[in-house]
Amino acid sequence: MKKLLTIIIAVLYVAITSGFTVNVHYCMGKISSVKLHASDNDACGKCGKPGSKGGDCCKDVHKFLKVEQSHQAAKVFAPHALFAMDLNLPVAIFQAPVPVTASIHSAYHPNAPPLVSERPLFLRNCVFLI
Image 1: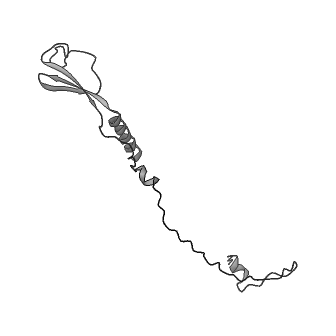
Image 2: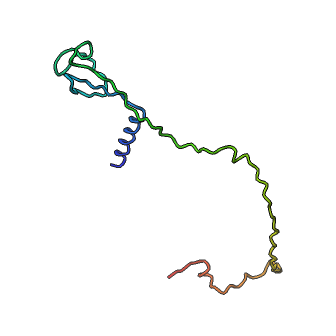
Image 3: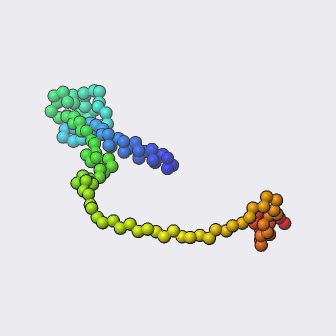
């Protein structure tokens, strides 16, 4: 249902923004018919007289309907003078102190046993078997 509603709204939006022609037929001073396409016959369906070819009682009016506003993204207005200005402000540069870390020296033994941990192996690997 949402897809159908979205498609209908999209088609309606495209039709309104691109524009369409409405043909209005007046017979005896009153609106007789309103169509989105031009009629092929010149005879009036109400009184039978020729429509726009010289009859005094009937006339056809063609109106082109389109949205007047622009539907584009707003353009940012920024004067170029602001970007071209050079501000010579004083800049203070401070040296950040480098933290001294104590290095741990451990001897490397290629065949040494693994380090002993206070937590058991099944807790370190998160393996809980029942």
